[in-house]
Image (cartoon, one colour):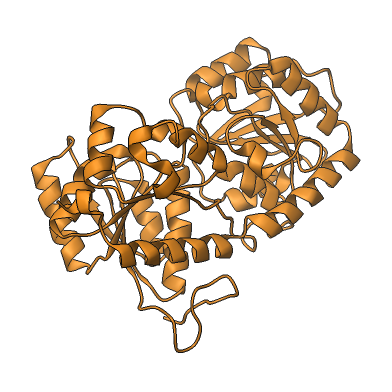
Length: 393
């Protein structure tokens, strides 16, 4: 496979390091940000000449997406923590794949990949997407001491919070690599009319899109309240929820109670977000999750050149500045969110200005190719260093 080297890569002709063999282990079922990140990094590494193998939970929609992307996939029945059958199966799979570095995400991944990797003397890099993914519990302290060699996070705010755990040694072990977006796939102008045709809405109807988990922690109830209490606008805007979550039914019930049921649409999980976002007049990300890292949905909206309303929380402020690339409001402030929605829905020049600035920021700071190159350099360093003495003993 031909290498896709650029100025951010490592090495040049004649001095490139030997190709990596990387295994990504993911035991969760629901499609969340880490799965999008995994696809981007894994396919990017393969384009750069490395070998990638995914070990993921059985019965997972992610498996089909990974195989469509040309990745090697093994489905694993993880079961309970430290399940000896899963550990044995994963150890065999890692050995058969010739793995050199293992990448995990949540703690449950470590409790299977950890003993399997230690038996093979393989280092583990854990990707922590949110500060809540690591907690001060005995299981977490145990797995970090025994198994995890390095940690990578997508935002400085997560690294800062991990420093609160003295047992983690975050200053030495944690690296920050911002998420990246395929700027060509999410290029403005691609997909026009896709969402409006699906919903049967004309070009004059303003569309507010929220693409995230449908859950209270993502602020969906606050968004519906803010949307339903907007002043009367003509034509009336519609709100489109894209994603899966346990609160979908409750969200639609809330919209009905507030008299907005005919203008709120839940589309479920979609893999054509790059097309659906094109028709959005603005994108809302009302998260309540203080431990959030760098949300992919915000970066995707930026890449599409969309005006954004988001909460001032987690790593969002590292991606956008209030009044420059987005409007930021306080989490849980339905009135403030409603006012920001109104300001953007009634001011096309403001929407256009914020959207242009957002696209420019995405091009400068959140290019997927740069993210993959940085991940490649980190993985090469982890391979070179190998497992820590405490992890391998």
